[in-house]
Amino acid sequence: MWGAHKDAELIPGDRQPINLVILRIADEDTAGYFLAGNAFVNVPGTETARSNAAVVVFFNAQTLYPNKPGGLPAMVLTMAHESVHMQNFYRRGVTLGADYVFDTWLDEGSAIMMEDFASQRLLTGYNEVRDSRLPSYLAAPHYGCNVTAWPKAADKCDGYAVWGAWGGFLNRQLGLPFYRNLLNDKANKTSPRVLEAAIRSVRPDSGTVPELRRWAASVGALIPAAQAPARFAYPARADAGAPLPVIDLQTQVADRKLPAKFDTTLAGHAVAPVVRRHVKGTYRETVTVPPHTTVSVVIHDGKV
Image 1 (cartoon, rainbow, N blue to C red):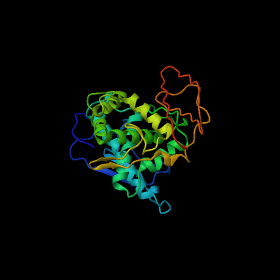
Image 2 (image 1 turned 60 degrees about the vertical axis):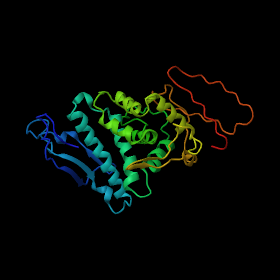
Image 3 (image 1 turned 120 degrees about the horizontal axis):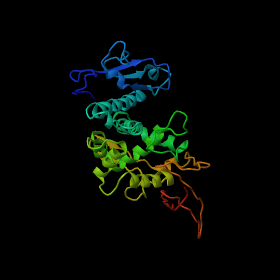
Image 4 (image 1 turned 90 degrees about the vertical axis):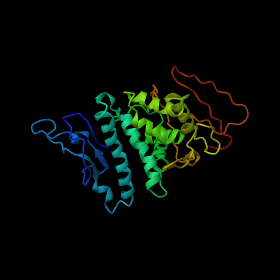
């Protein structure tokens, strides 16, 4: 999380404690945060004058109030999430340089993927992707949201739900080796290249776009876990120290909401599912596929 470096503007790299500070944050919806500015040397009269000169993560005490029975599990996942932001800052921004800092979508995405691993290992009977992030993605719905662009404040997309669904798919398809390679990549500067390289490190014949197509088909058609072809859906994984449960998308059918309509221009790296129900006999439909898009057809034998 913190160590050796050659930047005189930052606090020393040796013997720094990791500070976990629980205090009341006015915004009740803010569970916690890591701010890289706190790792700078405090110099009065400069832009670093408010730095705590510490490796520190803050957590909202309101999360643990008695009227919030799920507070402790939420705090555990917030610690896991924010610690990844701290690690990303040191591993990339400090040791490799500013040009290597993750884009927001991958910084947040990698932290959300850690919630998947941490919840399964640290919380009994609960998995953050299966029980929260993926249902939120399907129920809003957040189809049509770009997985490589973190939404702005006024956007309709929820980046946490989107990356919970997408990151949970990558975790189960590619496992802990993929995730470790994603975090520890020193060869690539840009976030798209880091993600591409991490996928190819486990599946040399694949990449971001092929995995996105398979995820789109899986999450768009709610492919049943038991009948899913190889490389589709959310199968269980048993990586040592980081097991992940299977997620049967068919359990989400009743809660899934399809968009009434899509924007005139579909965002890049997004999903646009169209469902035809109760088709019997011969069925014919002509679909126009716009440039730079891919159509996948999934046929269910039964009610979906």
